[in-house]
Length: 100
Image (cartoon, rainbow, N blue to C red):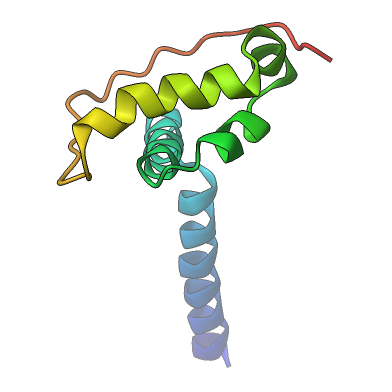
């Protein structure tokens, strides 16, 4: 009986350890994943979607048409994405007051 309880304690510990490891993703890893996702959508030409997903602060500062024209003007001359490699793990965190 004690061996079975010990086994359950071990199994539970391993499961909880995995859950905790996923829940504690580093800010650098989270920022990197978000940046790669954002850039992937820009690479795919989803400029209007990126503007709609932007904060109200960005939307007030840059009209959608200007956003699309700017991204298109910068991204199109680069051609299709061949590869992308992160060159730095440094993430600077900016605190901006909520615009709500």
